[in-house]
Length: 263
Image 1 (cartoon, rainbow, N blue to C red):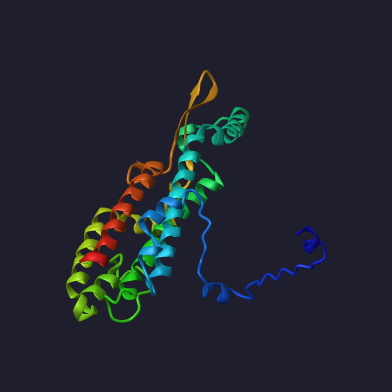
Image 2 (image 1 turned 45 degrees about the vertical axis):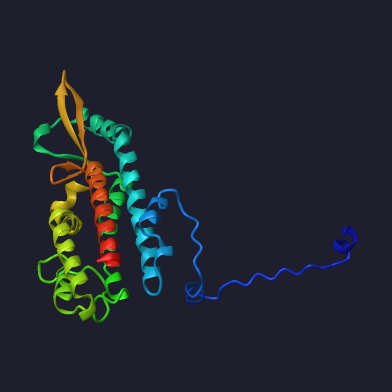
């Protein structure tokens, strides 16, 4: 055996894809990040076929991103004191040199990865909705293609509601009406809130939603940091908001897929 290997030249040929089109025609092998793994218990591509399988794959990785980003937000919030300390000390030095009336201003600390994680979470919620509703056309419930969870006028997801009311295939009419009721229910619980809060970030009033705020006072002539206010939506600190949103998305996902499969 040793003589064989000593006298034989083994040629190993690795065929690399030349472009992304070649990659997309092959079976995907996904090396999961630990945060994404729970998503595949809900969106298991082995349970789906045809056009639905790649959509399910995309649902799982988008849901996994929400899990990852939620954890990132929790970690940032737990480190708020440390992340804000140098900014507060710089402000303290400036204030001692030339004091001003503290109540005239609000004091925000710019932490880029906090800003990024909030944007990412809310944007990923909308992306997730855009992806999951594509199953409506992939599973043959509606006529034509569904490309996203788009508004109609001021109605969040209004286009999908109209499609489910008017463009369903005859054989799937009852299933489509069940999904219509499900989406309307979850719009009221969390969907409208999440999408509207994402949209809020592009308006001036969204400024205070992406930074820590410092509550300051003067004690014995020195600047004192009383507390750090966390970014919040609807009066709920964003770490809890994201956690609650994840729970709602999990419930919606299970109900949506069950309706598609069994109704």
